[in-house]
Length: 244
Length: 244
DNA sequence: ACAAAAGTGTTTTATTTACACCCATGT
DNA sequence: ACATGGGTGTAAATAAAACACTTTTGT
Image (cartoon, chains in turn orange, brown, blue, red):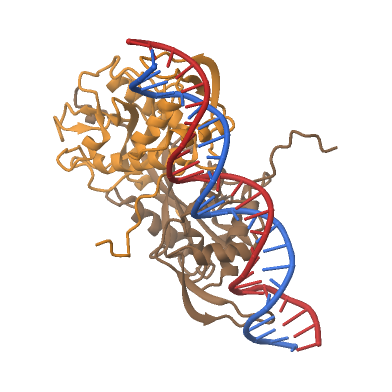
């Protein structure tokens, strides 16, 4: 085996971010309008190239998000979604992008600072709509991000990452309902989450509201995994028995 | 937003493979002995750099595995495990590696061809043992690979990917037992897998054996997801009640 | 008092677990 | 016949789904 390092091809390495939140009654994703070619004017995931050859991937992700949208990832949940490296995904040259997935609460300021004039929350359904054109292979990435979020909240407590620091059981239930696009029984849901050790920590405080009984306020508990998992209502089975 | 493409730092991009199998009563992983510095002589995951700037990541993974171990990934299950890019993970220079996870059946020839004099199956427990030194951050990658395999067989039918094309329920059960390192009840396991639509397809054939009733032979069915999931026996709870 | 939303109780159903028992084969 | 696994039956425990009902607030 010879040392082939002199002929190692180098590629441009980028990081992109699929930042999800639940707001205004919908699962939304942070997108930016591209200011340069290719795909100038099109919507894209925030992201960009490593700032220098020694920048860590996670650091690059935080930095790019802050630069482009003003959002600070510090303290929030983020994880690798996947690496997208099809040879022709960028018309200019070979670019491989490591994509991160983040879950942020609604109160994360939409575009609090930075080079953010073009950053905006977009409903996931809009981003995934056939008529919406996204730059590069970003539509595929958004699909993967949404799918990952949907399955991740089944077996982890990450749905709470979409909630403000203090939240009610109904807030949390709405997260599940909007991410899954499935209604859940409020009563069974309540028992399930309050009965799962470490998911919620009661603050003792209560919400006041226009009408109805006030709800107890909770904070995120120490548990990360859900045992047993939260079951997604099964989509109606491909029915073999004729229903006409 | 300016075009910064002229100062994009370039990194060397590698692919590595965590190829798992179940053989000789253990979960094993394919490792190679490094022929060059750094870490010459140490065990490492098979892998290497892209062959040219336009090679797709998946193609590079297949190619590297074939070159280094003679194993053909064609038709087998493989998926991205993650991308490892800590700035200092390679002492020579910045290298980012996209790691793939593959599940192969035992009959996949250990090192059927290629530059394979150093390739060998190593029990996962050995690879993860404190006393075993692996190149780069490969021990961490192996940990991630094993953990991914353990959870993946819970909710997918991928355990069958470790079996020969035709296998018995006991073969499949052994896969679960060895990957999880937990005994399973043969009777309940049988009912569970034979009752899960699309997991197994009966061939009609039977095994003959030295003793005991012959077992029915099955092939992998069309299902990919397990519904409901196969439950891993919960590890005995961190006992709060003193047992002295 | 009433509407509205929170939260508890109870029943039905599905799934898992545990284990008794029968089945089919080689020796 | 009997040892050795393969496979089925069944009952108890657990969890999910469905839904009646009580609680606590604002108006």
